[in-house]
Structure formats: C-alpha cells, structure tokens
Length: 459
Image 1 (spheres, rainbow, N blue to C red):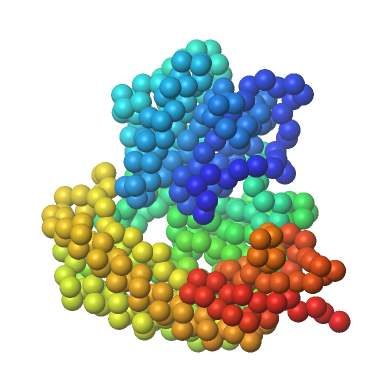
Image 2: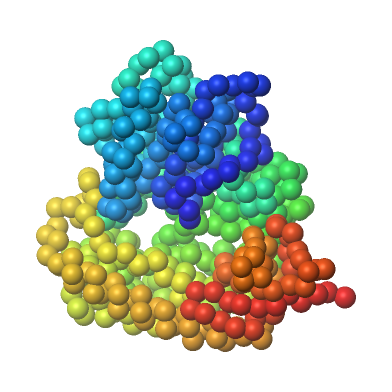
C-alpha cells in the first residue's frame, strides 16, 4: 500500500464548514489497516472543521499515522519528524498516531519535543476532545490504551481515498502473540464488530457506488460476531450478495483460522475474489514453533491443498521472514522448498528485525545482517522465477479487469484482476474505459510481477 495517500476525497465524511481556517496534513506509514484508519481520522478532522492540505508547509497541524511492524518503518517516522522540526518555529503542531505512538508512548515527547499529541489507534474516537486540548495550547496530550481495551474505531465520517474501492475493518487487535510481532502490544486484544454493523456500512458504500470492498483485520478470519449471528464465511457471503458489489476481498488471514468454508464461499459466490493472502512466515516447523505460530508446515500445506482444490483458480500470496533467531541453513532451505511446493503468486519477504516488547527480543539474534540479506535475495530470486513461469501460463487467457488508471506514456490502461494481479492493457480510443469500470482483457505478454494485454470489446 502507498505510504502517503494523496488527494483524499471526502465521500462519507461531512464537508468542513465554509471558510474553515484550520488546516492539517496527514501522512500514513504501513499497511491497509493504517491507510483505512487514516481515512477515518481524516473524516473526523473534516467533521471538526479542519481542512486537509497536501503539504506540510500549508498545514497548521501535521499528523503522522505510524507503523512499527518493521524496524525501518519506525525509523522512517522519526526521520520524518526530525526533517520537519524546523517548522515548529512557524507555529505548526505535530501529532503522532498509530502503532509507534502506542509503542513509544510519552517517550516520543522526549525524542521529539515538538510533538504535541500522541495517540494509539484505539483512542481515535477521542480525537475531537484531544483537538480541543491542542487548540487550548496543551503540548503533551496523550491517548494511549492498555491491551484490554474494548474500543473499536468506527465512524460514519470516513473520508475515503477511492470512490470505487473501499475498506471496512471488521476486527481489530491480535491475541496470537507471535514471537516476532509487536501488533498485540500496539493494537490491543482481538475485538470484532457485529456483522450487522459491518453489513450496514457495506450497504451504505454500495449505495454510494462502491463496487469493490476489502474486509480488514490483523487476523481477519478470526472474526467472531459478538452477537453470534454470522461466522466469517457467512459474513463473506452476506457482503458478496449485496446489490451493486462486484468484488469482495479480505486480508490478512491467519492459517490457524483458515477453514474449508472460506473456500466453499469463494467457490459459491462469483463476487468473492480469486485471491487468498495466507502468511506462512517460514517453511520450517521448528522455526514456526519458535515463532509461536501455532501450526506446522504440514498443517499449512493442508490449508493450501484446500485452496488448490478449489473450482476456481485462486491466487495464493504470503509473507515470509528470513533470519529469525536460530534459523539454520536447513530451516531456510525448507522455506525455499515450501515456496516451490505452494507455487505462490506473490511473496512479501522480510529480514527479521527485533521489535520492542516481543518474546523474540530476548532470543540471541546470532544471524548477521549480511547473511539475512543473502537469504532474502535468494528467496526473492526464487520467487521471481516461480512467478515468471506461472505468469507466462496466463498468456492467451481473458480476465475481467477493474480499471484503476492510465499510463499515457505507454498508451495503456492500468487494471487489476480478481486474483489481484496487475494487468496493463491497450484499448481503442473509442472504447477507452473509465476508472472504476469493469472490462475484459486478453493477456498477450507477461512479466514476473504483471501482465500485459489488449481490451476485448464485447458485442
């Protein structure tokens, strides 16, 4: 996902009052959850009479919505704050939101004294009150929560970044406590919304013209309706059957909660996309046990067998970590063989980095960074070859594509298939599709990360 969504259009949010002078700039780091949280923060700010601007220079108040999953993402936040501290003399105020805010807490005031507000994601509903404190001149405002919070960040004032595709958070937090992961400490315990509230939001989006909906959660398939009305698979059915909805995606799934009824739902309902993102993290059962992942290589492969046996060609993507403490060359080789066995359509690979408060931080990180980098490069090279071979098999096939934009320099339309694969295609001027529309395209060429095609004109 992009780090900094620009030109945010207020779709559901109420517009700021005429002549509003308070301005804000918001930059987002991290995953889809953070991007969607930012949409809700923006909607809340607009509702409070603020006006969004596109540069720090124009803003009275500067927000950074942060991620701490990876070490570099965290460093990027503090580097950005350091770059912009010069603006403090101009009267600008700075606020840090999200995972780094929750993780570091009031330490941020010490590291960056020009920051006036620090708030974790579970406290965003209190933003209006915090803004009042900020406008009153307070300079050390905090909104931090312990892990036991029951709060979820729901707001009808969501400023969505895309008028055709939108996110809905159905579950927040995490109870898995994987040894390497900081999310349980920064996002709190798992807490699900009711299926009724999710469906009400999805209906509202469909009524506004959204056709592509993505259900979000740190462990999205751990969704547990507090009223017990629907399972996760039943919720997929219900959202996918709403009039006007063309595509439904969900991320991120945890293997422990991945059940056959999810595949049965995808098989039964065309609106559910042909794509599952199922992070495995390692191909070694020994390393998975050390990571506290609660499944083995064999258990993961059983889930993959269900996906591969589907009536539809479901794309499978994953996350992999190399260099976890104690990972031997043999363990790493098991990850490589797992990649070949699963034939992933895409892999997001990372070097292990110690994160604050996590169990793994007490483990001896004895693998040199150079060796981690070497293993990561091998992994990415192998995956690139897997994708090259598999994408070549798509040449000649026809796919439905949702149009996302245009590359005028190349004379191409940019789109995405139900399998979440980028397909860039040409179209005759008299048949140029509009952004957000759905067309069919025939693949004529492949690359390791994308497909090239030509539009197929119906009739």
